[in-house]
Image 1 (cartoon, rainbow, N blue to C red):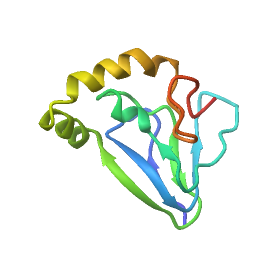
Image 2 (cartoon, rainbow, N blue to C red):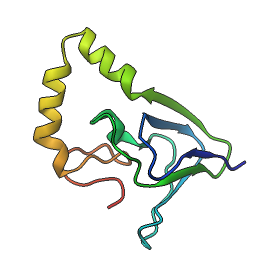
Image 3 (cartoon, rainbow, N blue to C red):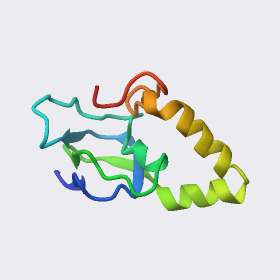
Amino acid sequence: PQSVMFKQGEVATAAFLVLQGVVAVMNTTSDAPIPPFTAGMWLSEKSLVGLGLRRSSTGFTRTATSVVTVEAEKFYSLLERFGLRDRYLSFCSEHFWRGLCGRCGVLGDHFSDE
């Protein structure tokens, strides 16, 4: 069953961890194919780095899919509650510009769509 999870251009309000199934991603501004996301991979992970970022692609399920949804505002509220917000933002500004890959989990080398 195919259903749209998020659309290109909308504000990224959550990140998704694929537990099972297959999520396809399509970017209308690029002809380069993007491999599907499967169990253990993150989508829209950039939403946890900066509030208000826009989605760079549209994601839709290819099969019956289960995901964990991490809402960005609630994530930031937890950081604030435990006094970690400034430290987290500092870490992101130092490392994120080099890449954050939801496929393999590597920080500082490449992005998921590279």
